[in-house]
View (cartoon, chains in turn green, orange):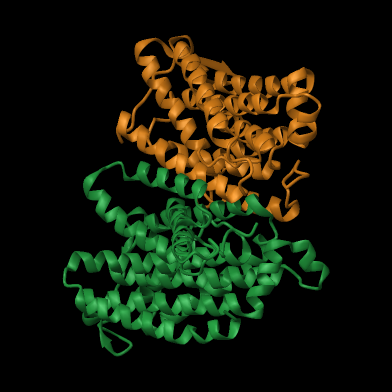
Length: 330
Length: 283
């Protein structure tokens, strides 16, 4: 299949995804199921943010919870202390995340490989400590509730927070984020970043400076994460330092790997599987931490590209085609 | 007052030096950043707690170290050795999975509450030192940290096995071709690194309480130590542990508002100055 027919499928796929989400939001009746699905969609967006950094830059972040939590804190504090409209504040929060992430990225994307993962871990914990200690602004360990206004984008907040509606909103945003990521992946810019990821030295030889493309991907990944953070704080009406803890970043990274980060949809798949499985297993056993640890190890060791890789291999075996065309290219 | 604070900083620095030297040894030989290191430190502390309940502190120190050595050697034999052809990210994630499992096991066996371990009677008195009174146990911890640093340095620089370890962390393939059993060597080194983590866990237990979250803080601080010091470098790690110990304690006393940020600012400044760390020359 050539690139042209593939790219022309993006629009119908996106539209199909949105229709599917809207149908599901109307057909699912149970409030608990809907709230689990909403969580899954929000973490799906978060996982897309962490996943794009891994896929395009080959960089592991243990600090993305900072963007997830800080964007929500920004909204909470601005709603409390400034007279700006909520819509503007949401926009400002995303813009501030972008600027901040870009400046940060210019410094940290120079640090190679494993040290980058450890550096993001330290950065993430820095903001966790800050949120915990700045009691006047953030309410300390107790967190703060967010005073959303009565209407947002002209719709009453009560309507937006209806189980069906909030799931539809989160799900549609997830589909749109996925569409953007597919575009990035197929663009010239996407190929540039992949060239840098695979061999920064060679990329530099052919005239590609590695820092700026890497920093832009990092910024994109932070903004996507911030969208998830704002959605999560809207859904819960509450933000606490727990959202910034590095274990949140670790959990999302786990979703990304379980889903398989070489495909664009993998991280979102991983998030959905994680959230749904946690809900199901959490009722049965208190040892879900061990189970997920074990699952993570098994998936990393025995599959090429997480669940999406395993599914693809299974599908192509049935079709008799070459197994796993998107296998790990390292 | 300053003397007390500096000595408290030395105590924390000594602990970090012991934990981080284990991390640095494992990285040096296996090129693995062990995210489970903090949870192994915690497991060592809990094993020591239970052993001390049946015997005494000193026996517990030995039992926990030996148990953690065996766990580390098994981890290398049935984990890291099988994974050596995987990319570093996959291995990091495997150790992250291990962290989740160990934390769950500890919560299952010992519960979620805080536990405490009494310090040994031999060291439960106080000592006057340079005009201040200090708990003998804390001074002993500093001494142990110094001994571990000297011992590891002598072992690496003066013994035949240390030579093999240095050779193998520079180039494992060539070292193996010269007839060194690098698999057995790395099982020993990972065992030693894990034993050091467990040992530090038991040493800490009398003055920091035991809890299922104790591993997390130490993990992050010892990551900072090895990153500041230069990944895989022992002298760098010792120096960084010393500095970080002082920054943490003096910061908490004299600059309480920003104390939580100081270690991070220090690390970021050093990484901008020298991206590979103080003593780092490889990535």
